[in-house]
Image 1 (cartoon, rainbow over the protein chains, first blue to last red):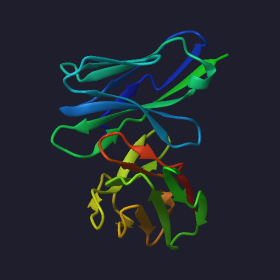
Image 2 (cartoon, rainbow over the protein chains, first blue to last red):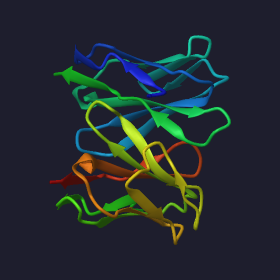
Image 3 (spheres, rainbow over the protein chains, first blue to last red):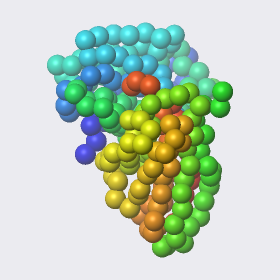
Image 4 (tube, one colour):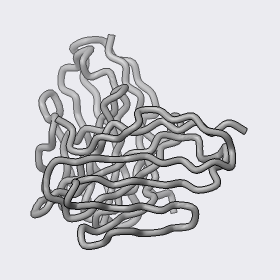
Length: 111
Length: 110
């Protein structure tokens, strides 16, 4: 079963709006990462948040982590058509090495 | 700096045929991974390696073998391809948790 599950599965917004994607996971983690995948391409790492961090920013990206609820959110502010992609959360399980990916959220930003 | 490259980009196999997918990285990363991506299922880890000469099973290893004879290369083999192995295969490498991905290989088994 998937460790990370994103919600929603798909999201369509207008350019300039904010996009929020959520990720829930099941076990204790070392860190949580978000990746982006443009159609037909490999994944690109966006941001990593450690289990002892609650919020992290990178440009227009804001990630929060709530370990008590085993959930994370990715906020993209002032979205652009170029943000159209699939976004995946990935969790590195505590004490382990492997990173487990969720099924992703497909974001479509309309110009 | 090419990053992570994968060969080939596309391949069509008949059931029972064999093939090898090649992954190469030029970032001197210790860790390398093979994933498959199927619609609606995200990425699933097939095999991984924590260094030259080492390999380990991931989440879905059955039907695949791997080798890491050189630090920069990680090979994924299909000995007898099955239609269930139709997928997009991604290789990745890392020095820590952040993974760098190749462009993928689209494999169809008929």
